[in-house]
Amino acid sequence: MKQLLEFLGVVALAQGVAGLLTEFTDWDWGLVQRIDFLDGYGIYSSVALLVLAAALFAAAESRKSD
Image 1 (cartoon, one colour):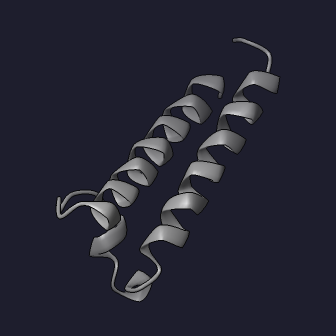
Image 2: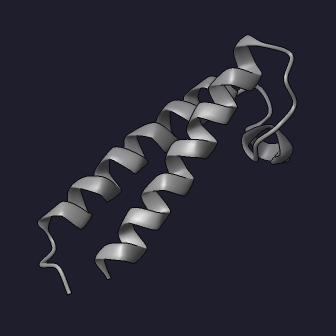
């Protein structure tokens, strides 16, 4: 379970960083800008993904290692 939480944290971190890079540069990668209902909320959703990544890492750290 700890490895799954860490993996999901890495994915959320990567997508959050990709979303912020997309907002501040003209790069076109990541999932945040490809989801239609998030149009116009790219920065907010990317920051939310970064917060989610931190929470997932904290949850993984609190778990006992298998």
